[in-house]
Structure formats: C-alpha cells, structure tokens
Length: 247
Ligand SMILES: Nc1ncnc2c1ncn2[C@@H]1O[C@H](COP(=O)(O)OP(=O)(O)O)[C@@H](O)[C@H]1O
Ligand SMILES: [Mg+2]
Image (cartoon, rainbow, N blue to C red):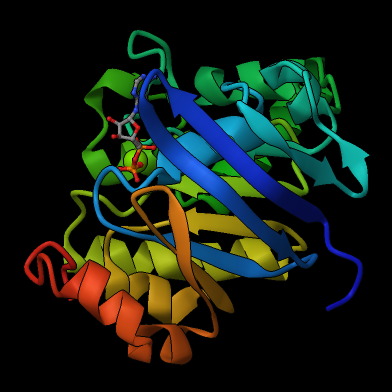
C-alpha cells in the first residue's frame, strides 16, 4: 500500500461494561473506497465517531496523513480534512438546501464567503444531484435527497477523507444505484471514502477493500470477494440474520 492517509491502531471504545470497539486496526490508502460492514451494534458508527473527533476512544490511536488526531474536536479534525455524515440525517429543515450547504462552506477549510461561497455551493449541489432543489426548504426533501444533502454538507468543508455512515439506508434500488455512482464519482474527484453500509451488494460493488466488524472486533479485512467467502464472516454476519444482510 502507498503511504496510508488514515491509520487506526488498536482502537478501543468502552461504554461502561460494554466494549463497542475492541482493538481495531486498519489502514486506508489515498483515494481508496474502504467499506465497513457488520451486524447492528458491531461498532461501526462508534468507529466513525472516533475518526471524526466526536467520540474519545478509551485507547488506541488514529492518524491522518501521519498526524495524530488524539484529543482533537470535530471542527479541528474537519479542518485537517476528515468529515463524516450521520446515519440519522440532521439538516436545518427550515433552511434552504443551498443555505444548509453554505454553512459548511463558511466554516470549512476554505472559509468561503460571498461570491466564492455561492459558486462553491452551486458546484457541490451539482456534484450531488441537488441543483434543482437549491431553493427548497430542507424539510421538504425526500429521504434520498436528504442523504445527498448530508453528503453535500460534508463536502462543503472541502475534505480529503469522507466517512459515509449508511447513506443508502431506507433508499429504493434506483436511489441505491445512484448513491453508488456518486461514491465512485467522489473518489474519482480525489476523495478517500470510508463507507459504512448495511446493503451488502452495494458495499461489495463499490469498495476496493472491506473491513468486517462483529461485536466490536475485526473479523475480516480484504477484497470484497475474499471477505464474503471468509467462514468467520459467513458465520458471524450472514449466518445470524440473512434477511438483515439485504443481499
Ligand atoms: N453513546 C453510547 N453509550 C453507550 N453505548 C453505546 C453508545 N453508542 C453506541 N453504544 C453501543 O455500542 C455498540 C455499538 O454501537 P454502534 O457503533 O452504533 O454500532 P453499529 O453502528 O455497528 O450498529 C452497541 O451495543 C450500542 O448500543
Ligand atoms: Mg450505525
């Protein structure tokens, strides 16, 4: 692997007696699409919260381009180029789509203002397929559009690394395909993508490598077709709840 852009070592998160993430280690290469899968409660969202600076790990380390993120707040991590989207989308519903994105552009790395900000917002809305909805109130968007707005808000901070938490959850098959196309386009534009996804066919179709978590532990990591054949994955993930895997 080239010099990794993200390095996670022995990351552990305890919530009282529960160990949500257990000594997880992995590297992500620049411009990689790195999928993270695992049953509900596996620790996927907690892992992303740690990456983004929203959750303090109990132990372990996270490095971005070789620099430790230890102790940094969400805004400080975003300024270094890593942002995440939320599984439960939380736009400002009473504001327009464009204004929701403008907030990210204003507080992001570029600190855009005025005409520069407007152009940047227009560009991001076009990239995320929301151009026609720029003037709509966020509260009027469909779930598929809300997931795109969540991505657009993250892009407005001008990240190098984008962590997407279940952007395909609740979407119909056409919307899922469109989301997969968007993820590939974002990578082609130079971003590194970490992708938590419940829809296994989608994550397999789009990821270069996949990490599988189960009860907080890494049970497999590798190319999608290898990981899906791994007996530990079959037993722990698909064996338990095949209908949940959304194959
Ligand atoms: N803030 C928290 N306090 C206590 N327990 C939590 C908290 N966040 C997550 N958990 C627990 O940690 C485990 C992993 O949760 P989560 O990271 O959301 O899993 P996933 O995203 O893989 O479904 C679950 O058992 C969950 O209930
Ligand atoms: Mg989750």
